[in-house]
Length: 415
Image (cartoon, rainbow, N blue to C red):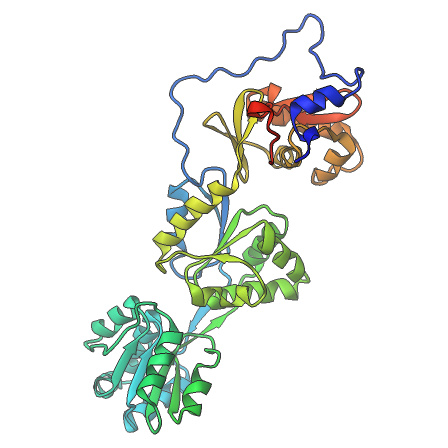
């Protein structure tokens, strides 16, 4: 930042008539609020709002986030439709029982369990398990491995990475020419997986255990998309690739696809549980963050690290100001701020120490119209929410500025 970015330089350059507003005669200057009692501990996600797109285990993920202080906006991006009464699954099951496969690839725990349960309902459960037990069973990850074992079977191999790419590579390295491979699908096509096996000479039988469908009520998903576009969310979590694809598809249907992508590329963190989940977003040039371990707990811990790290603290009027999603932390104390005040504060913080004109602040207010008195009203409420009015100075006839402290040693902030 240039020299005018510091409060000291601003004081030197401003005309004499443009002085900080002083309290009227007879009225004492407002004093910073005195902290009473011990300060409550600031949780990692206090002040942040996180979107949850999961259809399954959404309650578990939401509880983990709230326990760490986040506000949660849940909107399932899809729903799972079981195919227990679907002729396609029944035909595939009968086909495999009649012509046993050499390899069975189990991709999801819920899918494998659903397949066995559906077969039981048709009276084919024992026949299916007996058939699968004669094949080489590959389980994509530990959850799938648990479902395989719960069915009384034993997997032959499972990749540490939980990656279907590693499963494919193992099959190709083993050689699949002339082998019959049964692939339990996970609701969405696996790009290139079946094609690569068939090109290598395998006979592939896909087993469609369930389908991903749009949610019956699109209202929550639409509201979540709008919240991303308006930057009302700080992060969105994804736990499956179909959910990510469904969110992008719905935004495009509503004509907000580019706005959604712009927000996700810059301002709203896209947090994915694993690399497969991230693929639809990465294909649209959305930067993603994911934990090393593909679990809900590590996903939440990732957010606990990433979101506070984005809140750059500022030294303002002798205090430490940290701006979070819908709240601020002033000297270690969390203070919720109304949306209008948050919009003003963010604009002031983009140029700390600089004067921001009222007209520019007015444009930042949602639905404020043309009346600059709306800025004064919102600013008064913001100062009240901060509990320290001196953090924001009024510059007569010009606007407002954050009372940024001079940098130590004369160094300019931003250098």
